[in-house]
Length: 366
Ligand SMILES: Cc1cc2nc3c(=O)[nH]c(=O)nc-3n(C[C@H](O)[C@H](O)[C@H](O)COP(=O)(O)OP(=O)(O)OC[C@H]3O[C@@H](n4cnc5c(N)ncnc54)[C@H](O)[C@@H]3O)c2cc1C
Image (tube, rainbow, N blue to C red; front, side, top):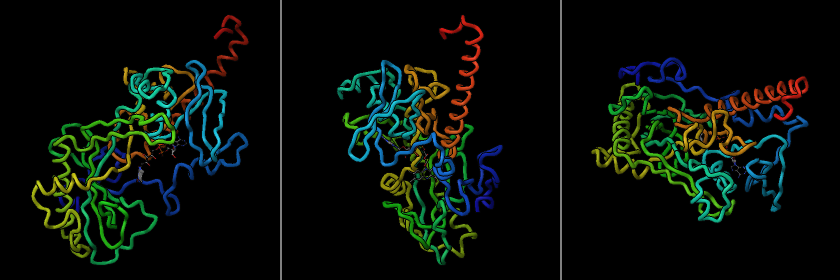
């Protein structure tokens, strides 16, 4: 339907151009979604130098001066401490990595002091720069069973495009198609229908993560700031209109039942804006709260080491300076792969250095 409407067919969203319609690449193995744990951890569970503790809540990082020396965690009601020889790698995601840094004394000094947390290093960027994707769904009943597979990722086909407000290289609208009803407000998938999710890839507003209390068991305070920008709302309105046009093309004639959301009666721009404001959802892609960079608001350097402290890296979606123009899971796996390369390269460099120390005592103080 998209190609018939004039959009390019795109066989590879990660190829030479992102614009166009096609099928998403997915982390699927033998017909099932393949998580990072299944792909990377399960195959090495038997390694003797690997210990995994599940059901543990990390409560803070431990420091001696500005050197990270370990981690404190709560497990089965008991507080434990584990010390590290080399470094701590923090991968708690875009909400909890900044939360743990702040609980450990790394963040905006004024914010930490209001909660009585001693400052180890002032890094005002911790928890700032929160970015996410949001979507509004267009949902139809189907006139026949579309045989939705319970192992489907729901959004299997899609379309990236530029709205008329976008002069950047990256598309600002993403459409995801799934042969299932994904109906607000619960968004619990239900069979016998189809959904086109209209998503914004680069929202104009930036949010933040802060602490509500110094108690690690408390959830952090999230300021998402969705839809503060009128152009973002207009883009969603135009996206819903386009989605409806696609669903009303003859390709959908044999499948199309009644429109359930926004609903056939929701036609004017004002009614669509109200629908969007009442029903839009996150695409669950938070990033950016421990951003990589070398400016004063950066939290980690280009090798993912936290500025101002030793022995601590952040490796997760929080380090993205800018959100990706599409889903975040594969880019986050790439961040993990890159971090592994950086860590291994650092160890090789240290080994070479320590060997040369033996040969040249002048360097023994390094
Ligand atoms: C419902 C949902 C659907 C999604 N669908 C897609 C999709 O279809 N495609 C896509 O590309 N992306 C999808 N995403 C986004 C994708 O899952 C994330 O971008 C990715 O998982 C981010 O990885 P991360 O390592 O930064 O954080 P996470 O995967 O969130 O990992 C952080 C981990 O740290 C743990 N943790 C946090 N705090 C602590 C603590 N104090 N102590 C101990 N452990 C802690 C958490 O339990 C979690 O296991 C989806 C996300 C959600 C929530």
